[in-house]
Length: 81
Length: 278
Image 1: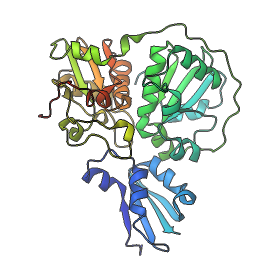
Image 2: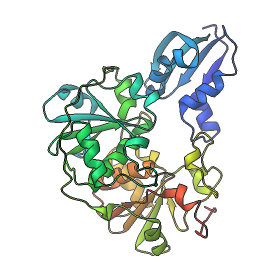
Image 3: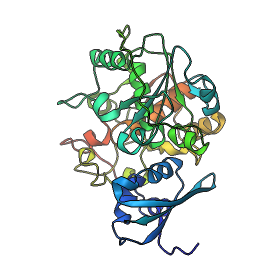
Image 4: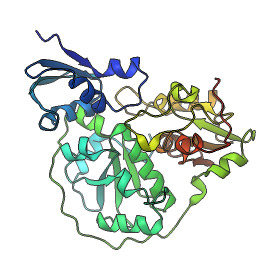
């Protein structure tokens, strides 16, 4: 895995004791990247994983790969458009 | 586990059966139901369908009748609820079903999260609905607490207030993020005397319910026992409804009420007493 850009949704939720939804955090973090950059998104929520896989058109990215690493770790690799 | 809980594998087997209505209850359908849902599932949009406008209140019995009829749900249907946000809003819907006497209702263990985790089918297809003529035949508001009810029982040794929010919210360090302007509070903290038992203590990491013995021990050790009158609250009532589901339907607590005004009412009310220390 060569991607250096990572959005770890679980870590943000824990560190900020956040009551924000994962998708909102994802949208905010994604806005900090430039077109063409690849970003690896890590989440412990299968629901958020499913949403991120299906929201590329809305948020402006393409999904390159997605996989379940363990029962509480899900990943999606995207490229910002 | 309780008869009010259905496991994902059980639901998968009975999908599409006569007399069973599966309903997804979402806070935000645009990031959930609209992207994909359990085949045949209907949608309840928590904000639009379970709340009144313009006043702030839950839907009344007539509103519930209209909603059920529009969704094609009959009085004798088994309704299986699940949803986004760890089933919080599904639990809120179940509480409304309790208030309006629809007893044949269950919660899908683990909600959307567990269903997706298991790799079970999802679809974007919206089911065709034949409207019904649903009638509310029983109303039970003893499961609901108002601001006045809570004020009357402050420091009452027979009443236990359970704040199910996160410790940071309980301590007043967090009120509501800016993304939720309708949930903002002027002040942070908790209702005096409330014990903090976050809703999440009752679930595993994947959102499924913990074993009942473990859940029972958790509440009893903190003085939340079935002989007491329990009032649960959170920020807008949805996490409180989840804990209501756990205490009432899983552990069999009878004397329990949801204060659905919760912190978005208490934390804005002039003169309402507030504690911030733990």
